[in-house]
Image (cartoon, rainbow, N blue to C red):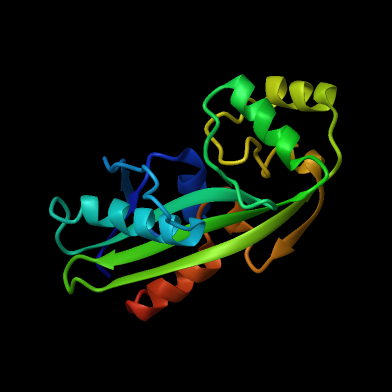
Length: 193
């Protein structure tokens, strides 16, 4: 099996990839993540996932490189990224309160030996409970999810903000859709388990 590299500095993605019990290393790619004019959320996450994988290709010949990127889309079409601070996180959760948010997770698997790159986007929808400002502030102060698209951690206390979820792969909500990744790895001849 070619060496496996996760093109991400995200501890959440590393924890997810650990579930597959495959040896891997990780490295943070340096790319411009600015959304292009007129670019849809799906096109954005697919492009960035592939760009992250390709950014490390020259340094890692003979590797399978995993790239991933995620955005949240409000029901009105507004794209949410990582809030980075409390005021933006409050704004994002107010906008999500009582409505649905679709998370789009782009996934790419690049075989640097053959140059073949598989790319996909896995959606997952979260239906939020109605939230008041007090609930939002208490949640944000406790969990501080400022590095998470949509301003919550579903693997933690953030689950208390949901009324329900809908999708084929709950791991996509955390940022690395393992079911689709396994499909891609199997396509490359990786044996799992």
